Length: 311
Image 1 (cartoon, one colour):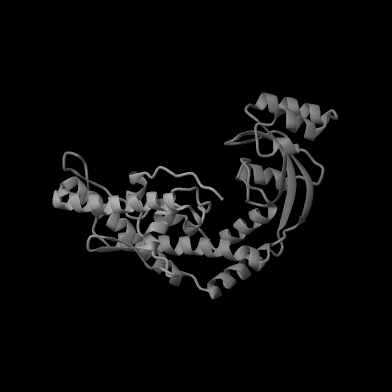
Image 2: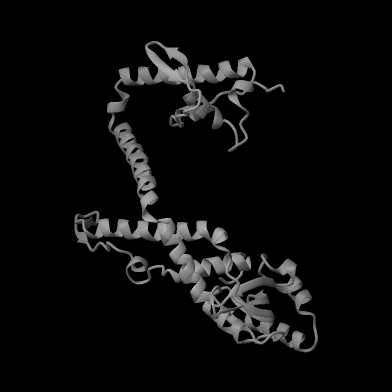
């Protein structure tokens, strides 16, 4: 397969951090006394294409390889010239180097830390608790029509009471792009999966009933319940990753908040006057994500209720 010679952007090369490829790595270039591994060239090559679409470097024509390699050589030579000119000693450059170094080290530490934060036992315990909490719960399948004002909502409710087709009215009038093409269908969702006003109204309805206009922060809703059933928990295999991510985020936040809380931090205005610094945000202090939230997330995933609807 023929490949066109790609113009190589030095800026793209300079932005790449070296990635080590353990398999079949070797020295592909010598620039003066410096040796450059093929893994570094491969890392640069990958950045020239959308993620996952780069052809294998070894399969491309020699002119393309040479173009990439010249870019790598240019980077090393320009780096030497910059060091000789003392660029790295300039205050703005030093600050950027320190910032980049800090971010790389922090990112690596977080990766190391999260490996030990959540165990398989933790995930199973969380799933079992979520399953127990869901045992006697119901979920409903509902449709809704979302409009901007109460007057229009009342008019639509009047038409429905008079025999108008709910699905047709939703498709023609609803402001919810995620459900209007499906006649307002939101799928199944558990109690509490939507904003409170919407959820409370939906779970008070019997199958086939239509609500009066309900106001939420999204606007005015007319809600129709199509079905009710016992809450279906997704399998452990389907829930495992979501629960792990939830617990990891929760525990990492707790760890970071504890570090901040134990450290003296001072906060100043531009005139040097000290201001109060809130070490732990209100959400972390008083509204921590509870374990049951993992079940709610699993419920919502099972119900496929992810739209711009009121949740």
